[in-house]
Figure 1 (cartoon, rainbow, N blue to C red):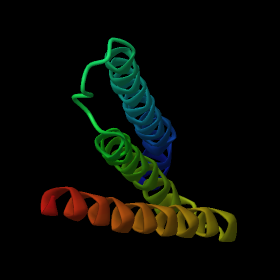
Figure 2 (cartoon, helix red, strand yellow):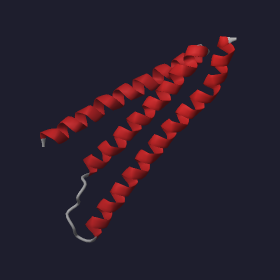
Figure 3 (spheres, rainbow, N blue to C red):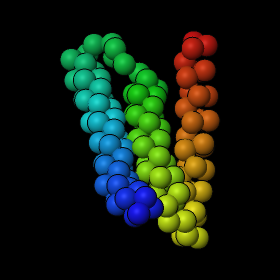
Length: 115
Protein backbone atom coordinates (compact mmCIF):
# COMPACT_ATOMS: atom_id res chain seq x y z
CA UNK A 1 0.00 0.00 0.00
CA UNK A 2 2.72 2.48 0.94
CA UNK A 3 4.72 1.52 -2.15
CA UNK A 4 1.71 2.17 -4.42
CA UNK A 5 1.15 5.57 -2.80
CA UNK A 6 4.82 6.43 -3.28
CA UNK A 7 4.75 5.38 -6.93
CA UNK A 8 1.59 7.41 -7.49
CA UNK A 9 3.08 10.50 -5.81
CA UNK A 10 6.25 10.18 -7.87
CA UNK A 11 4.15 10.15 -11.04
CA UNK A 12 3.38 13.79 -10.19
CA UNK A 13 6.64 14.82 -8.51
CA UNK A 14 9.01 13.81 -11.33
CA UNK A 15 7.25 15.75 -14.14
CA UNK A 16 6.89 18.77 -11.85
CA UNK A 17 10.60 18.68 -11.02
CA UNK A 18 11.48 18.36 -14.71
CA UNK A 19 9.13 21.23 -15.54
CA UNK A 20 10.96 23.39 -13.00
CA UNK A 21 14.25 22.44 -14.65
CA UNK A 22 12.91 23.40 -18.07
CA UNK A 23 11.61 26.69 -16.66
CA UNK A 24 15.01 27.55 -15.17
CA UNK A 25 16.83 26.73 -18.43
CA UNK A 26 14.30 28.81 -20.39
CA UNK A 27 14.66 31.68 -17.92
CA UNK A 28 18.45 31.52 -18.28
CA UNK A 29 18.23 31.53 -22.06
CA UNK A 30 15.85 34.48 -22.12
CA UNK A 31 17.98 36.37 -19.59
CA UNK A 32 21.08 35.72 -21.70
CA UNK A 33 19.27 36.86 -24.84
CA UNK A 34 18.16 40.05 -23.08
CA UNK A 35 21.73 40.77 -21.94
CA UNK A 36 23.01 40.11 -25.46
CA UNK A 37 20.42 42.44 -26.99
CA UNK A 38 21.27 45.16 -24.47
CA UNK A 39 24.95 44.76 -25.32
CA UNK A 40 24.22 44.90 -29.05
CA UNK A 41 22.03 47.97 -28.63
CA UNK A 42 24.81 49.70 -26.73
CA UNK A 43 27.32 48.87 -29.47
CA UNK A 44 24.94 50.23 -32.11
CA UNK A 45 24.80 53.49 -30.16
CA UNK A 46 28.62 53.51 -29.95
CA UNK A 47 28.61 53.00 -26.20
CA UNK A 48 31.05 50.90 -24.23
CA UNK A 49 29.28 47.60 -23.46
CA UNK A 50 28.22 47.24 -19.83
CA UNK A 51 28.25 43.45 -20.02
CA UNK A 52 31.00 41.33 -21.55
CA UNK A 53 30.26 38.22 -23.57
CA UNK A 54 31.99 36.20 -20.84
CA UNK A 55 29.58 37.63 -18.24
CA UNK A 56 26.65 36.68 -20.46
CA UNK A 57 28.01 33.15 -20.89
CA UNK A 58 28.47 32.81 -17.14
CA UNK A 59 24.92 34.04 -16.47
CA UNK A 60 23.48 31.53 -18.94
CA UNK A 61 25.74 28.72 -17.70
CA UNK A 62 24.76 29.22 -14.07
CA UNK A 63 21.09 28.92 -14.90
CA UNK A 64 21.67 25.92 -17.16
CA UNK A 65 23.57 24.20 -14.36
CA UNK A 66 20.73 24.92 -11.94
CA UNK A 67 18.19 23.62 -14.45
CA UNK A 68 20.23 20.44 -14.87
CA UNK A 69 20.15 20.03 -11.09
CA UNK A 70 16.34 19.91 -11.27
CA UNK A 71 16.48 17.36 -14.11
CA UNK A 72 18.96 15.31 -12.10
CA UNK A 73 16.71 15.45 -9.03
CA UNK A 74 13.73 14.27 -11.08
CA UNK A 75 15.72 11.40 -12.54
CA UNK A 76 17.04 10.38 -9.13
CA UNK A 77 13.52 10.37 -7.68
CA UNK A 78 12.21 8.34 -10.62
CA UNK A 79 15.10 5.90 -10.46
CA UNK A 80 14.56 5.22 -6.76
CA UNK A 81 11.11 3.77 -7.40
CA UNK A 82 11.60 2.07 -10.76
CA UNK A 83 15.30 1.45 -11.37
CA UNK A 84 16.14 0.17 -14.84
CA UNK A 85 19.24 0.05 -17.00
CA UNK A 86 17.92 2.83 -19.26
CA UNK A 87 17.11 5.21 -16.41
CA UNK A 88 20.49 4.56 -14.80
CA UNK A 89 22.25 5.34 -18.11
CA UNK A 90 20.28 8.57 -18.50
CA UNK A 91 21.04 9.49 -14.91
CA UNK A 92 24.74 8.81 -15.46
CA UNK A 93 24.75 10.95 -18.60
CA UNK A 94 23.13 13.86 -16.80
CA UNK A 95 25.62 13.57 -13.94
CA UNK A 96 28.52 13.67 -16.42
CA UNK A 97 27.11 16.68 -18.29
CA UNK A 98 26.40 18.51 -15.03
CA UNK A 99 29.88 17.81 -13.69
CA UNK A 100 31.60 19.01 -16.86
CA UNK A 101 29.46 22.16 -16.97
CA UNK A 102 30.13 22.94 -13.32
CA UNK A 103 33.88 22.48 -13.84
CA UNK A 104 34.10 24.84 -16.81
CA UNK A 105 31.72 27.34 -15.22
CA UNK A 106 33.93 27.44 -12.12
CA UNK A 107 36.97 28.02 -14.37
CA UNK A 108 35.20 30.95 -16.08
CA UNK A 109 34.25 32.48 -12.75
CA UNK A 110 37.85 32.13 -11.50
CA UNK A 111 39.15 33.86 -14.64
CA UNK A 112 36.62 36.66 -14.20
CA UNK A 113 37.57 37.10 -10.53
CA UNK A 114 41.27 37.25 -11.44
CA UNK A 115 40.70 40.17 -13.85
